[in-house]
Image (cartoon, rainbow, N blue to C red):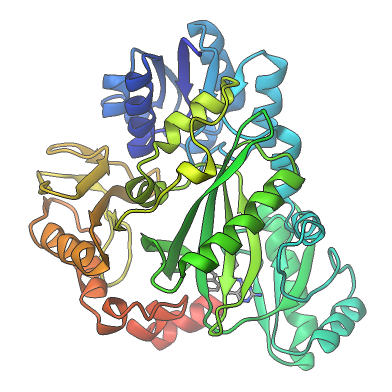
Length: 456
Ligand code: MV4
């Protein structure tokens, strides 16, 4: 087992990784930017190294600084958390060259799955259900038009290097395709340095359902069921839950089998997530695979009782999975609400000093956060300051627990999304489990000018 792990991240996920390390008896190294000197992840790590100025590009994305910190402190592994360098095949490669274990899949697997067109091909070959679309990137208007006419409009153009909705365009008619193709390519080039795009059939108002998997270095892969993440705004998830209100035991078993086979086909190791779109008839279509621990991993931990971060660490150290598929059981229902430092109406970031902080605990409540009274929410990073995760015997109990927890949460000094989270969980459609990626637009129609600005 590792003796010392460097955590190449900040905020709640850095603390979450420290929790796992402490329980495993592993020493921790925090890295931090000048803006995070007084953060809890620095306080609770055994050692800490400042890696640069506040801007992420100068600190949490600085591979040489992070590797140097690992070498100076003698860390034998790096956990990248989520965001930042978590899906960087480059960091994974440099780790390999420096004999530091990267806690994640092999660089070649990160590269394969990071290229959405290559990933689709590999997954199609492995038998994963797929929306019809171009076989790889489309390099010309004529090619894109012929694919679109083949599969029928509407279609969606997506960036090969994409994710998060950038470089994405919905195309409803042949006439608008040339312009949208060009803008998608330009946006992808600007955002990712890779202008390649592909075309697939567009699904209206699907559900977003994702499966968690774990794979070890001995050929074992298991799935830990699904999370439903349909409540999103501008490709930012707001509320996630497990199980999905619409997935039966039978469907879970079938889809679980599909993702386990797919992961084996690419020799996937460590934790991973297979994202799917689900249509109104319950049909699944592969979207992408995330090669990292995800923000919403706690809802899976709550219903399975499995500590995903500890499993990641054990797997990276070469251990066999501590559980077999037949040991995985799903108990009750879990919901996560993300608390963002933002205006609940305009969604503008709201950094600053938190003067009052009180989040109730009680049965079935877990709070993953770095925040506390008198802490500063920095404008340099993501606005997520906490995740409230509840568990109940069933969905109704989980909703009741989330409601009373949000109602009794006191955060003063900054604006937060708590009122928005409460509004959503009190919606009849949410309570009935009628979820879709269109939920937020139906629920909170954007002002007309905002819509225009967004599509410009
Ligand atoms: C889609 C889609 C409908 N049809 N692909 C959004 C982010 C990117 N990862 C993929 N996304 C979508 N791809 C097809 N063929 C709808 C979306 C989508 C979406 C997906 C999941 C959660 C929220 C979403 C919000 C808008 C669009």
